[in-house]
Image 1 (cartoon, helix red, strand yellow):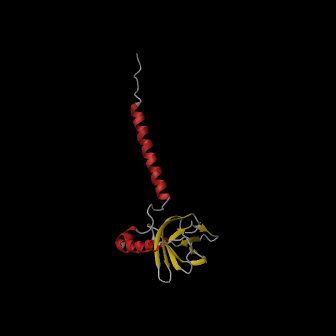
Image 2: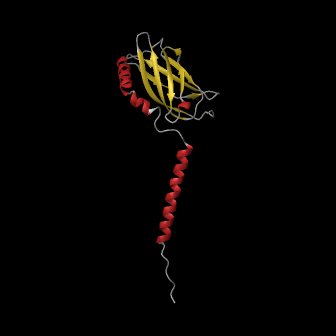
Image 3: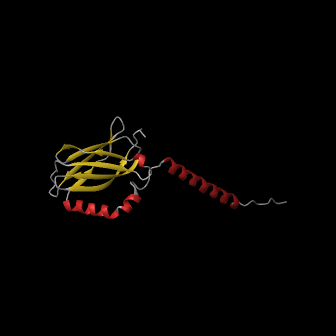
Length: 164
């Protein structure tokens, strides 16, 4: 009597489906564990104020200022220190500005932070954001000179600080 030969295909299909389900569950776990949104800021609010934002950005571009935003530097309390370098068209630092920065996340307004800027020297300014959750933020920068006003946005990554 000959033995019946068993087919491997049903087991291979079951193993493939089980692997696919396991990979999908792993991706869901990663997505839930890392709640930082892919889009910083508040897209709905930005869409409603689109014309105003574009007009402000065009006026800022016409000034010819270049504003470089440094990365977040965490202090002992977990606060985020942001530095800005502001130069004019000729590359000279602009002194005597006032301004503030606002960091927004799209997932929770409770995590939004703002800070006033202080002068560090000619063309250098800094602001300290209170401790917040790690993740991607939309950073709005507003600078006021004697007769000029500059507005711009940047993306800011705030690393893990240990504070909510």
